[in-house]
Image (cartoon, rainbow, N blue to C red; front, side):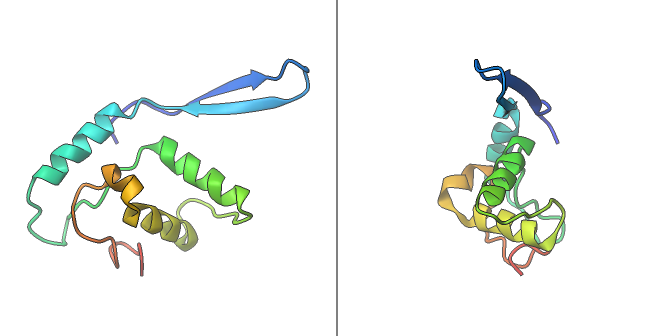
Length: 110
């Protein structure tokens, strides 16, 4: 995957007891590549690229699921379902590299 790695930054609360971890990543190259892919015709489902998701969003989505009490782990059917749901959401359309639905591709949405 192109782009920069995810950087974790630790922040100690002024009370000296609480620690927060901030994750950051420059995703501009990934988003620009996604735009390029969307502008190209993909001829078949075999080898069709659906999305390119920056790692920072994977971390974000996993944290959101954990906050809901859904302790999903990466590379599981449950997390594949989270990814498929996000990629169908218009708010995350910028991650898509095609205009088709995710249904049934590589386990997403099946």
